[in-house]
Image (tube, rainbow, N blue to C red):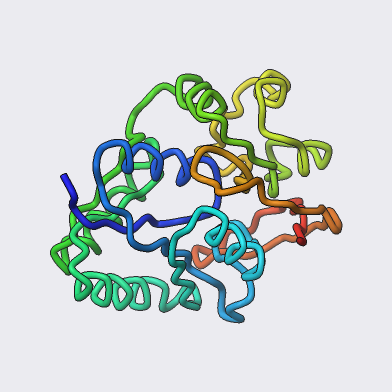
Length: 224
């Protein structure tokens, strides 16, 4: 295929598996794109430090773009990044969403605006099949965020493996697609070497989203 693409990159298992599939399908990945918060110091989606995200990208050998945005100007900043990527002859965007239709609609809308194809390699696939593929491919990740509504603090900081999935309460998605938990990938076939990390602390945070909805999370602060 040799179609140039970038990957919308959270640093977690789903974007990693989508990236891995895209490479297998012949896409030439040139960049990873991670949106940061207003400070520019942490990723918007998973609150991972810039240092950890850059170390991860270096370990798998891709250029990482990390623009900063508030919730209010998120789309504007994202589209500006798409325009720059399109100018580099990149024609496809890889996303790791599984079945959140609102996410897909937004991704297809912003990509279409700059004539980039939105590609979702994991779309509508069985959750356990995806988990088994991720683990079977040799990828390893740590759970760096849990939503207190679904999971207790003890799940935060655990390795995402078969036992973790077995221990999930009934009704919690095995991939965390509904925001129950997030992960950070530190080893696997795309990595030149395993990425060392330490959990500095487990802390509590209750952000308020643009909709006005509040949520309560436990985060694992990762350091090198």
